[in-house]
Length: 129
Picture (cartoon, rainbow, N blue to C red):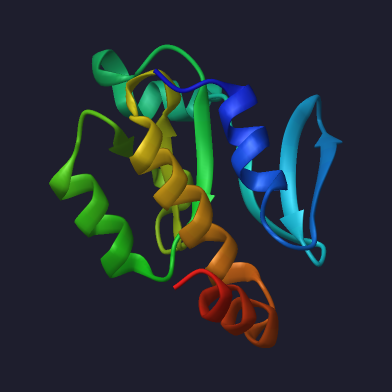
């Protein structure tokens, strides 16, 4: 079971990452570009999801594109999901209490790589191959 402390540790370990609070929720950015964030479900989300709406902490994370988002949902629908709010937007929602440590690391790192400046991402990959 992952926690916000795990997200914080993983995100802040990545180069040029910072943490900020917006609307009482924590966000992590690289060079002012949001890559992972706390994303509690809102009333429209709950209405759209109905009885299948998950409980517990929800992490929002950028993904490379819609195909990556759909692949994550299909591969592990118990952990990954989306709402109509994110239709057409390259981001995934993650049930934090259901994701394992290694999968969380991958989600946070991939989100960072999508949003980091190209040179910074390439440098990170070269140093961490």
